[in-house]
Length: 155
Image (cartoon, rainbow, N blue to C red; front, side, top):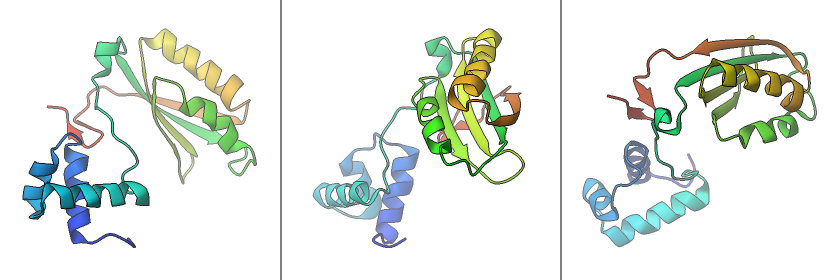
């Protein structure tokens, strides 16, 4: 990747594992001073290599006990306003990830829900409000057990 070197890659990998690591501890891992690490982190933020910082939260503490992977096959995956249609969906609190992808299903959504009723309500809203009947098929898988989320082992 242009603009980054091996030290930057190590910093990115360490931050992916633990976004709360101190600059001192990070510096020890790459043999740099905290000030030098701070400069590199700021450079990586400006480049867009670091998109943001967040905590990995157990959704059960928010009353969301069901995680679903929702795949959407679109009638027209090249629709001009597809990105605009998805924008509102991305802002929903329970939506964790949204991807446009290759294959039979074009959109992948990972979201958490209080229960099956909330999931069903979301699916209705997804098709009618956000995709506006652009979906040909929707396939839902419920996550039974998680082993790693957002790069963090669950157990």
